[in-house]
Image (cartoon, rainbow, N blue to C red; front, side, top):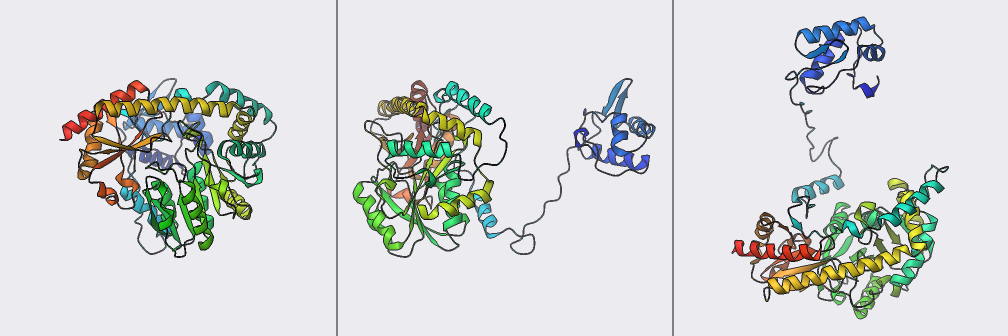
Length: 492
């Protein structure tokens, strides 16, 4: 039966069967009020019956008020004839039995109960300090359109699956760019293109971690990374951080399979790990025979000085798996990121990527490669760095003007967000402040969910929020802080 006509999926030997099928779909809302039925000719062809049979069915339905018919027009469902769709009976998922979820699925259900860490601020009346959102005007629309069009023309005779590791041109361009911008030591064969850093972390968990393996993550950390490792059954434990990032000298001397770190700009607190701690971390990984997953999520954005070199650049043992993304410099909607792997892991990660989804989008890869090769991408990054530095300065100025002596700001030297500790707001009022702020027209995110246990930051005895600024104008930033002040006053 042709699905384009949305005809009922049943075999009709008689007009009675066709009549009952259509009537049932009208009553349960599958065929909604006002929707047109297929023409008598189309329905007759689909069901292999005569057109006269279909006409008789439609006349019967019309006589009973289920459909409306008019000369020269298709029949359609009468208003009030259908009801809201009846949901199918939900299948109960038991802890055991043939229809039970896997251990992975059960862990995902726990995350659903927790609820989202943050939502997208779609309300145009709200000034949203949403981390990860970028300004639309920053995207290089014209350059991207030209590069994408060239890639489309070049691929017009080539429609097939590509290599799982990604386009060779992009991997070669990336290897050169990463040597220049992040001091990475790598060759193109070590690069695997993925759908953003989230998939990169997921690949690390699937390929390297077994259930009950000890995995260390920073405390606090990027929640979605911790959840990925928890979902595969790892024994996830927290590693302490301070204003300089991971406290590597306090890492446990017990067998650990992997450690996930953000050394160039600790997320969310913003510390930059000094070389002494980096060397201690590498030495620890060698003793433990553990992998280090380095998430360099926004390392290109450092203000007042050149970006800090990646941890991978000082790794001479092949312990570091480097993760990068284009989400912060271009757009999170592109879903393009990359892994730079130790040689020993290249083959298995390529095959894991093939099993997961074959490969990342080829046209986007080709367009991006051309932008890197001709220098457009690096000019774009420098421009974005200047734009975001002005936004950062606007935020720091607004906090200083409107909340003097009432806040402590962390992580302002790098990245696209800051953590603000509200010294006059009690720690227990953090969630309520977020709610009241939304009512005042400003979106902020609490820091508590980024800790393994929501009260781990309680030693500060005050509320903390994360303010992303990359999507806002300086004027909006100032007004947003004013609204935050009003929220704090309303809370008191």
